[in-house]
Length: 296
Image 1 (cartoon, helix red, strand yellow):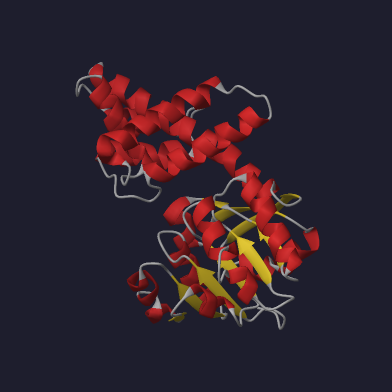
Image 2: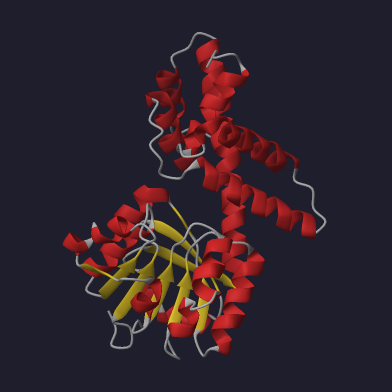
């Protein structure tokens, strides 16, 4: 911890924000937390996180405000709307938007923060609930390099940070990450569906492929979820759709066509439309089973 950064507010203490707030408190920071579902913030009291009555109260005296809300529109409302968090932050404080949001939203938040004398970085993360709990997140930071450097003591308990460019670059890097993750999850689901229909044991197929070219963090973690049928959400499918759709919209704005990602987005959208949006995104294998008349 440094003298300049002592008080941290975490806005959004859900699946990811909760473990992150807990780790920061245990690292010695004075942490206040707020969540739209108050019980989720209150559950962190035994880890040293103080529950704030509202987002503005959490942020008012903070040196750093971390935003871990669910989407770009929610971030815009809470941070820039009427009585928004940015306007309650003291000049000189830092806003770290660690949610997955559109590039355009990240740039707009940075401008609004700068107009109020607040530094801002867009620093989304990858690693899921497991990475958040273990302090092993990949943090991709866009914004001023000097501000990112100031945040190193804050990011250290959470994972590994890389400065990837100016405002919006972190959000863009996260979109690229999400396209890779979503496509890989679908490929793993198809491979295990094929293995089972062909008469092989999916668990043994997964075991056989570990360490080969097909191996990856997605294959290890989400392949295991598929084999075990454990779809308790670490990353809900509805948020996967949010990210793939955002990435594809940005690609179209650049004149790009991404055919694999478009098909992956359609598959996840079908999963959400069929009522499984709250399941972990590895549950896309259930959608494949439905498409193949339950023959997964």
